[in-house]
Picture (tube, one colour):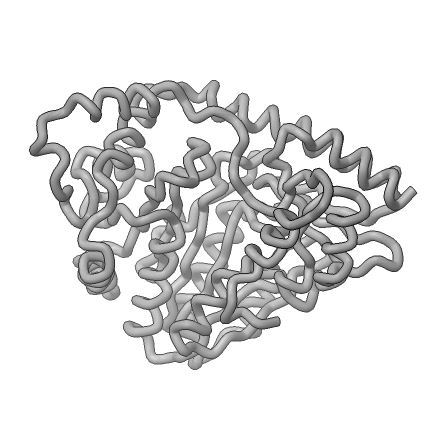
Length: 372
């Protein structure tokens, strides 16, 4: 697979050119409202003093960093606000490749393609570790694959595309693998509010100096266009303390700073949004997962019921997950999904569907009819 070129837009552009109505199950844009506190924050900001329209601190608004630090139980100095989780992952992976001796990035297969694309962009070698039959990455397999050449290990939980969730014990084992091989564990936890299993554990809780945890508010607050994320780096007074300063410098040289109004609105949302908002989002998605998986079963598909996130992977009889077959689904069934081959060899026969559309029932009916 060509991980140098983003592949998502190939499918999205094909669907946009289709001569029929297509249910978009490609993109991961939440279709529900953000919390009201976010809109209130934007309205408040519009009336702010002109001085508030100028550059914010490069590392992020102090009050937002303090809010994040309090929620994650870390020192505020470890938190850098970024332009989404994408930049947070970039800073973490770049820092790991610079700081540690190896030139290899260890990734899961299937993999969210942007991790692999970023590794290629940085000139790193990549090694893939296949998930097991339950779509989970076995820490023992990661340990066997890691070596002196490994400088970065990337784990994503809840996982895109498999829906796997790793508990605290698994995350501690991944961190231990990184420590044993003088490498950095980059833990992307952007779907942490979408855990249906109750098992999610953050890599931060492993209390390891070889961990960077990344996250964003794109999914949890339904604001993918705001581009507010963050990274939590190891303590500055620890053995890998220079990682945070490297990241701050790169962030400033690349972006100068992030969006001040977006950060302000996110802060107001965090302060005013009750746990009920996140619980309702989970209930909505669990209901969609139920209905979609029932339809997949009727269509004779093999599928994973995700423990977290909002993606379902399915394999249909004699219909592998190639671009050609995904295009056929768009043309003939009116449903857009992502080909499994984009995510790696181990799930190349599968197709990934994003359940962030109110038309899940309609898409399910179309697939059942197409494969029925």
